Amino acid sequence: MPLQIVRNDITKIKCDAIVNAANSSLLGGGGVDGAIHKAAGKGLLLECIKLGGCKVGQAKITGAYKLPCRYVIHTVGPKWKGGENGEKEALESCYREGLKLAAENDCESVAFPLISSGVYGYPKARALKVAVDIITEFLIDHDMLVYIVIFDKDSFEIGEKLFNNIASYIDNKYVDDNFEFNRTWADNMGESKILTTAAILYPGIEKSDEALAPAFDTGSLKDEVDNIDESFSQMLLRKIDEKGITDSACYKKANVDRKLFSKIRGDIYYHPSKATALAFAIALELSLEETEELLLKAGFALSHSSKFDIIIEYFITHKNYNIFEINEALFAFDQALLGS
Image 1 (cartoon, rainbow, N blue to C red):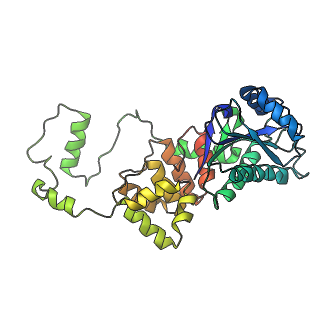
Image 2: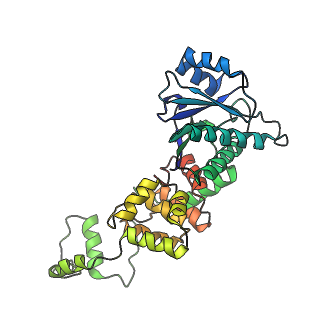
Image 3: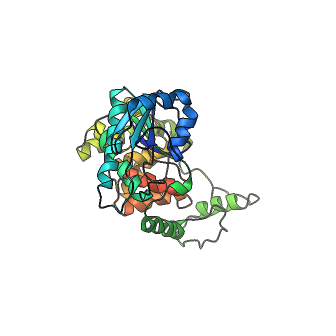
């Protein structure tokens, strides 16, 4: 199952387990810790008292009480001391131990806050990278839906250089939906295309003779349908074979659920969402031209009137096919994420 970055209150996430960024006493505190204890009620505190605390980098599990989940996994993140005092290793351990407990307790879904990124001072961009790296590593061998829950936009940041580069790329490519039509017609543009476009722009225009006649004989429409081209599902499976990777490697790299992939594989006429189609293009590391071809099979295209599309184009042209980094960027620009 995929990794999803969501902006929400972790105490309201409906999943099997939520992770509490606790202090070593496990008796509640500020930030996420305090919010979870408050929402869960006194029962959580009474159970935590029996646990006898928790060391940095370790994790312990309790019931969830009044929370809309089954368990709370408590882990103690490191305090940032400059980055040379084992902070990264301790933070990695928080995620590994939390995921291990979730798997041991048969959780199919778990939600993490961005551990240590609040009062403990761990730089948010670095904290997010650790979270994504360790969760991605875990998901290679496990089927689980994992959320990284960001409480507000200020709690989230991607690298400043990357953000500025993408913002500049968008500025250079973006076409406002309400742009003023101003086009120089190419000399070789056919008359029918000119008149068709003119009719759209100026509804009162008179159609001349056969200028707007269909480009094909309507009597041959049935023949055209009967000779339908390769479908999205067929092209996807062919591309997977051509790349020499397994189905599971592909859908995991695409951040797509195994059940959804099974639907696509089992139905040659399956119509995916644009985000799902693009996720597979990223997983297969397709060029921009190949991505357009795969999208077309699903009935979509990339457009410079869409910031979402431009961000995807940016990463493909820069040959960065890390779907989680792409999703971080999409999240930063308030766009939908890739995958299921």
